[in-house]
Amino acid sequence: MKKPRHLISRREILSRSLQGAALACAPLSGFGQSQPAAAAGRKFTVDLTPGALGIGGDALAVIDLAQRHAFESVQPNGDYIASLDPAKRAELPALLKQKKLAWGSAGMPVDFRKDEAKFRADMDALPAQAAALQDAGVTRISTWLMPTHAELTWLANFKQHVKRLGEVNKVLADHGLRFGLEYVGTKTLWTKERHPFIHTMAETKELIAEIDQPTLGFVLDSWHWWTAGESAADILSLENKDIVACDLNDAPLGIPVEEQLDNQRELPAATGVIPIGEFLNALVQVGYDGPVRAEPFNQPLRELDDEPAAKATVGAIKKAMGLAGV
Image (cartoon, rainbow, N blue to C red):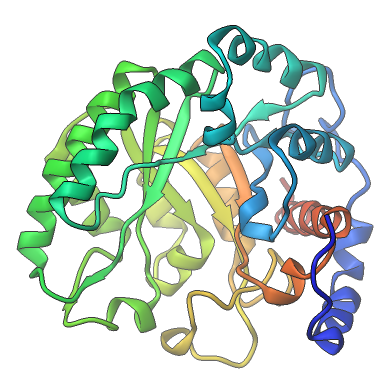
């Protein structure tokens, strides 16, 4: 799938900056085995999440792309899976196994951030969507928390999240799905509206504790972990069962952390601004066994064609792993 050719000079800069990452694409120990397997010292998988990278194509094409570039897992496409009959869905785990892949984490389809009517309409559709994912062998699903609100105070927003996300999680749990919540630590975002909301791991722990359901956990993102001013000790306060998915990103050079913009990031280990080694080593220490995926919101990357975008991304993740010694 071809993409528009804009900002050519920026694409050229990106291409040069990714040469080092591309060199890291040679398989590490544990890659290319008959089952999805991690290198010694880690259990997590290198995951392809196409939408975050500007990668198009249908679901099966994305699975093939993941195989060609030695990813170890791939994000489930919920719409595609729901469009299949149950027998076809049940064939997908065998297809992934054949291609030496596992499922990553699906996107959660319920909009719980808006009005009650929208939430109820989405909840009505959720049981069938969750059942389809279960048929396909998917076990993880995730979403993010908006860290601010124009109208609701912190407490009112907290109560609404407890009620709505508790309802969502019960449906997901009934279909074998662990549910991950991603806090957003970017200061320029959580100060954007009148009422700041959850934007740290500690606050997210409080939300999860209040909902009090065992299949509810975290999505950790190196970007939000860094912008929230957290450390490896915060990750080490968790267990593998608490973490559903992880995003791995770097930050642009020369911008103070409090001025960073959420939608302008870099591929993992591209700049060294975020201490990726600390983040990854903490994941290894807690025995995290889910997907690790890049979510750079990087326009030059998005303008690459699918093959070079996938190659650059897997190279960057493996480079970060190499620097971390995992």
